[in-house]
Image (cartoon, rainbow over all chains, first blue to last red; front, side, top):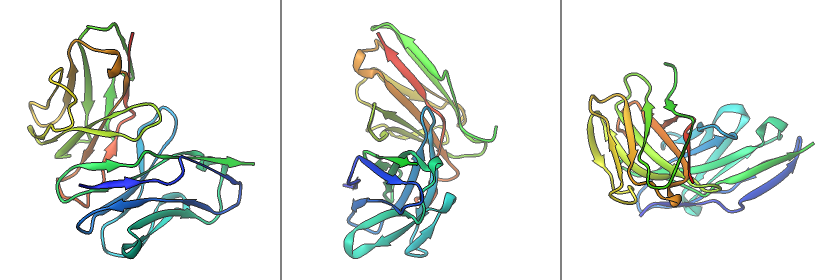
Length: 112
Length: 115
């Protein structure tokens, strides 16, 4: 069965500092991996997706993620945090069928 | 419309009442998904449609939950005899095809509160 684990339910960074949100997946086959962001009272917006074309994936708003098969990880990073990055972030894996499995989310706080 | 539209945005019902939640996917999107998101949790899969066919309903928590998409476009999630544990945000998502590399596009959800 597919699953994702997001380490750290809450992460706080200073404005301008590096953002690192962790995601590990379990999968018996190379998965499709996604990062979504959710602002209060809104649905999820796609940040980026990994589909095996390249291990380093660039997304919107300056975010990127690196797929590391040896570590079964797909961590999300951003070099310099902005106040507007404060939100809930979800890692998700989709199997070759059609089910998405979401992590429990990481709440990012940006300190001015 | 440009995105996935869900209505109502907020629904309050008394325990035991039936509710119906509507999802209008992006035009032309083949796949449609329903999720339940409890407070502080990630979305959990409920059911999946490809066009009008409900291909997977393994996530529906009980036979009180029913979903349909009769013409392969708009979908309705119905909950009968609501219980307090049904209180959650219900998210609808659509994707262009059924292929695994296609991302899902989410609506803003319906926040359901059962009193």
